[in-house]
Length: 414
Image 1 (cartoon, rainbow, N blue to C red):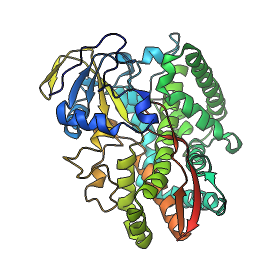
Image 2 (image 1 turned 90 degrees about the vertical axis):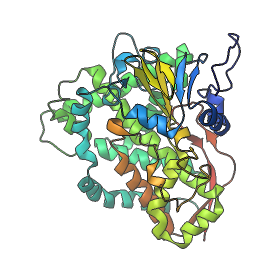
Image 3 (image 1 turned 30 degrees about the horizontal axis):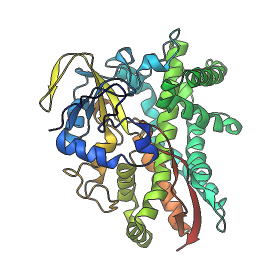
Image 4 (image 1 turned 60 degrees about the horizontal axis):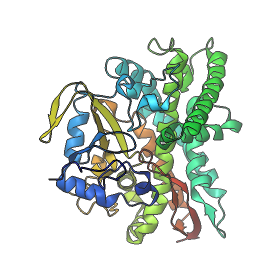
């Protein structure tokens, strides 16, 4: 079993999987393979985010997720990312969000927004999602390269967020900008960027406060702001809590689906035999959606904090220590997903992926993400649209959002 490396202060632990370059260079697979084999629960004593427990196997992550009273998500103990909350935020204002809360408050606030993502709401929204997807695809050039991330992934997910919030359409790209600033954990290493991030979050808060004030005395509508206004659990939120929940809903609704849409094009191009199978049989789309979400894993990790001394896979975890659950590793765990690095659109257990988390914090918008990706694949199939990736994409340089900045592609008919 691997044990914590004894390093000089300037040395790098080769099993510190929080290093941004592993994701920028798309080289995270091997260190995680080694962690799963040698030390699925590993104490990383040296990292730029401080010491942490690295939990990399599917079984161990499920165990942690299933015990929220031992492994806390609360912002009070550090939050949900490897970057500590106090590194991220203005000390004068707290910005809790319901994913970074423990029961009972987590349950109360989650229940407020859950009606936006019920099966009946998916049916109600599906025609509009299909129409916007069709319009986006019909606006793409067939005879010249373009950036799939900008023209498709960002456009579709930002549009969806604008609908969910009933956000002014002309300003919808602000949602993408705020999401990028809010979700970038590398910013904690740069004081100037930390200040810029706070400015962007205050800009976001001010904009949404105006929307809140415009709707506060109006009849309930299906948008998320109205749902908050008309709920006992959220109608009296502080400005900081309002901003925290906005960050959650924007990053959760934007970065995850957006990067899976980019991963869709990249993975099908990387595995042409799977793409050919899907092109020949569109009935495979539902399972392909789950497999693409598994293979991509749009959020690489979530963090918990131990509330008491405990044991995990034979390792003693002390109260107050940081535990990082690497979903990106669990989804490549060969004991659960044989030949896990390969995209297999017929994989029988593809839906067992942990990209949406597990337990009480499982992604509230999972159905909507699946619906958007399903419709994108269906509309591509209607147009016999094949996406050829022209060069390696520019990837997000961090270990939280596992995503794409730019991906040049060209379309062809099949």
